[in-house]
Image (cartoon, rainbow, N blue to C red; front, side):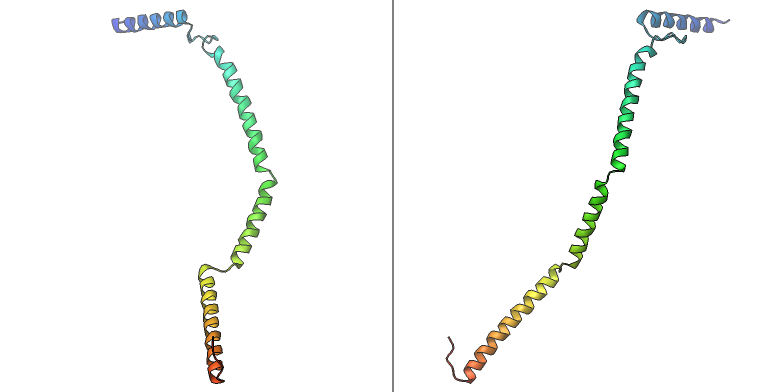
Length: 117
């Protein structure tokens, strides 16, 4: 062995002793570090199961089908409603008819000599 390998081994030995002293993993397959992980992993797995159940419930809910039907009905109703320009056109036509009718009444009353108000 050369001196570099001896120094590296000495450093690894010191690090291993510190891990043992501090309660860390020794790398020997013991339960030192991973013993605290079991409850956390179990909790994550349980939570994941709950999330799956909720997602399955969301995917199979009948409310979504009813909502789709309602949206389709609203779309159908809106497609039959007049647009803004159509409403403006109807208003303009009615105004024109009213003005034309008023003009006709005034013309007829002048024709027959009846006083207009």
